[in-house]
Image (tube, rainbow, N blue to C red; front, side, top):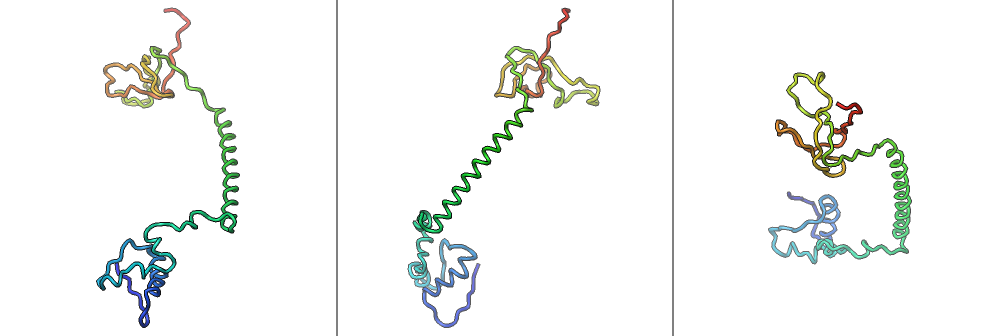
Length: 185
C-alpha cells in the first residue's frame, strides 16, 4: 500500500514526522518498519520520530507517566472516583447474586444418591427402540444395576449386552429408584 501526501516546497524531518502523525499514524497506527528506495537517509528513525517521544512508542515502550498516574492530578482523582464506583457496583452485584441464588435454590431438588449395586429405572427418552412409534413404548426401561457414581450428577449403569451401542453413563434426571413392593411374591 502506498500513501501519497502532497507538500509544498522542501520540509524538514520534524515536519515530515508531524505529517506522519497527523495523516498516517492516526489511521493505521505506528509502522513496524519503513521500506524506502531513497536510501538510508530517508528512513533514519532518530530524526523522523524525535517529535513527541515517538521513538519510545516505536520500541513498544510506554511512557512511565501514562502507566502510573499521579494521584494529585485530575486524572488521578477521576481514577479514584471510578475505582470507588466500581467497588460499590461490584458489591451490589454480589448482593443481587446472593438474593437471586436464594430464590432459585428454593425450586432446586437435591439429586438422589444411588449406591453401587442399587437398582434403578432408566427413562426411555433418549433411547432408540425397535418400535415404529414412541407412543406405545415403555416410559421406563430396566431395572438396571448401578455400577458406580461418576461426578456429582451421573451414574454408570450395567446395561444388557445387546445395548453395547448405548453409552452406559446417564444423568441423574434420567434415573428413578426401584421401589420394593410391599406385597411378597
